[in-house]
Length: 161
Image (cartoon, rainbow, N blue to C red):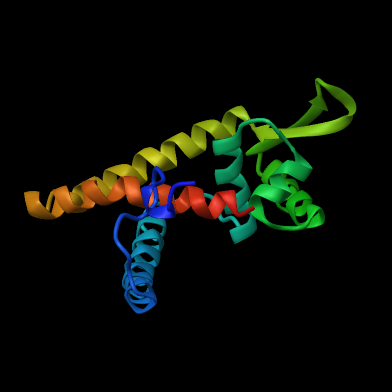
């Protein structure tokens, strides 16, 4: 069996635990602050954090059973149901019978929910793009180069579900 460093996607150089902890500390704050500022500066519906997470998950997952949504969000089924109830009241999500099992229910974004999330994504991308234009070409290149690693980090987190 090949060493972990030779496997596809594995780190090629050893890194100390301290260096990894420092990187985590340096990444966390700007990522969270950037998320907060972009969200705060693009108006949208007044949603709870659980509703926001459910809305984004439904956009990513498409039609899904409530249990699968709860597992993806790492919350209990009653919490997922409550979040979806709120989204339904706002017209952002809808439930329908599962085509594979009439006893089960599938939840998905409503037409209005799809339209609203598309508009929010467009507005947030435009806001972020406006700030990106103020960076140097070198800074933008560094950010672009970091995107694949950030995507891998997200997938590792999601795979832990």
